[in-house]
Length: 209
Image (cartoon, rainbow, N blue to C red; front, side, top):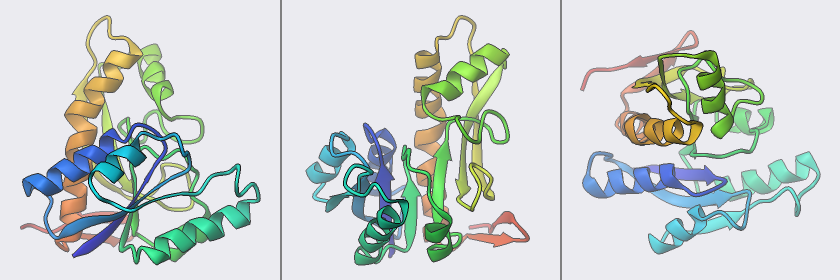
């Protein structure tokens, strides 16, 4: 059973998608053992509590020193005996120290088709504002492993989403979540939990079922 530690910063809709997929049986051989947030106000913590999942907070306010923050976050991950760290709407930049502690064992969901609209500064609603400003007809979401860069790790899954005429950033954000993020993040977890994902020469290989 793959032990998941899910890192969140806000509402936790991707966390809910994971929990729902596990309940529905579309994610197998995996369980969420801890939800960790960098904000005590994150609604995701309430979602976790309602599901009976242990929670923890590691905040910059309480750990202003970067090394101290990393130490506290690592302690929570190690205490949970996490096999896979899932960044599900997590706005914390994961340091090289943590990446090194969990090589190819940290995944992130990004609300665009990497390499478009990704990297430093591209997060949240701003990603969709940038897509609309560029005038793209197709956007989507990407699940990737986390490495030392920003949105630069090996890509596991992507799913495209149509951009509709007169979309607002919020409308596009919701469509990307519903049609892509909530679909491919649970799917990626299921693939990893069932031993179908490997990384070779910086690229992901997915074995047939």
